[in-house]
Image (cartoon, rainbow, N blue to C red; front, side, top):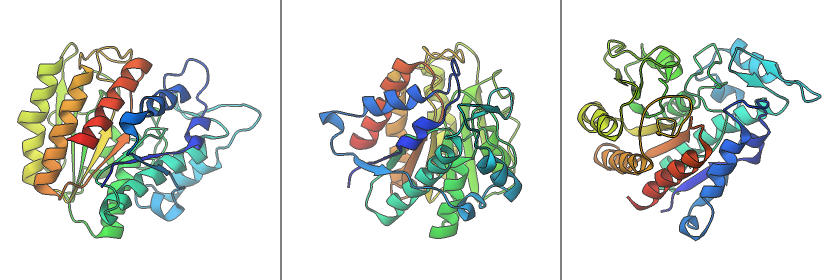
Length: 309
């Protein structure tokens, strides 16, 4: 079986305006990095539109209606908050990002892909149950987890987040639900200001904050010594990865010093974990990463490890 690469051109039409860090070029450089002979065996799939019922697995109807009704025209932009922008193409892009995450789950559960990487935008891990924020409109990883439970009957799902920013949305959605384990390494202090170590939910939340200036050693230790053993004890039936590459030393939005090679290493570790606890079931969703060369190289290292580990 090969690895599925799920994307859609509509995700490029999510226009955030000049100088916004979460820009269409992020997706362009990732897709360009995954071209060529090295990646020729990827199963290249188009992200479908998520349905209203699928979104409602996580979000209340007023939140869904607000996002889908916001379709400005004439190149206008609507600011939902100081960071989160919508343009004419944003609603469809958000539906494709959520739909791509759902397709990734189905691909792995149906067995026609060994694992899957969703190269879509907007990202999702800051979107709370009833509030968009932090560049995110719908909570893609959370929707994927709920879909895995609703369609496939899985009782335990883990969301593992290595974005430099804490996934407050994922935590908000699942902190009172012991059927989903959420673990995150992230810089602290940093946006959005959540993710302290004492935030443990019902014992299903594990936050490992890293101080500014932390690098490969601290990043690898957070995962090998803290997060992976805890996930193994939880024994999920599927792993969903919130793959943000903004902990890279080159990224302008934070101050961690993670190297490109660390992402390849961690991907291999997570695949090994998936093989031990959940028959190798792993899907990965693009979150952050705002230095374009570092994002392209890191995403390529991640997918390369998915293909070969």
